[in-house]
Image (cartoon, rainbow, N blue to C red; front, side, top):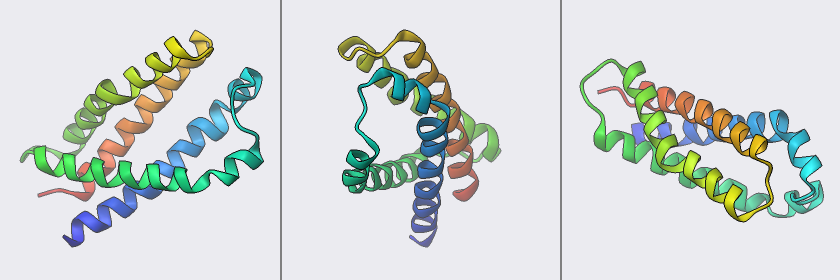
Length: 132
């Protein structure tokens, strides 16, 4: 149980950090020019939802990884887990957003690529933290 808690906390912090790098730094200009995002004040007012979302990601990421982990080298296993998570969630989510919201295809592609890389890094981290 201790390993699950430590892993969930670490993945929460990493998820928040990677989310900021991808969405608050790398894609900020794209978001600003789209005119579709909340103002900084509006985002701050909803920050509790951001914390809850990243907490859910961290716990789910940890528990699902632990359920399927194998007795193999942690790095390859973690990167594969991150890639599979990205194929099942990240890429489809942004493609759906592109279909129903007026996001440019270039933004959608950047979101997919950057978040897939971030999720693969998180996969490596969760694997490292949850070695058998």
